[in-house]
Length: 139
Image (cartoon, rainbow, N blue to C red; front, side, top):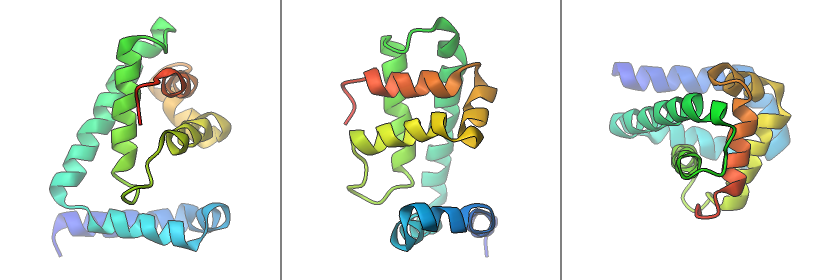
């Protein structure tokens, strides 16, 4: 087993241990298994691409959140890139504006996600949510 395959296996096992029960209860077994299948099936190139997108979104959030302008063109671009990153882990056809909005709403509703995004930039979770809400050109 390659180091990359080992990393994916460990990530799936960690997600199961830390979030498996919660995700199954909230979204159902089918969604949980589909997500694991997607993660397990990622190529190393897809993983690297998703990590670059994540890092770009986080860098943009770090720079843009202090401006307080989630309606700016740069914030809209960040929202688009965030959607592309999230889509890496969703089955084909699952991405929609509504699903993206629900995801970023969860970032402000769930203290664990809020803490993560707020550690990147003060008010980061709320800024990202607002940017996605106001970016009417993402689909």
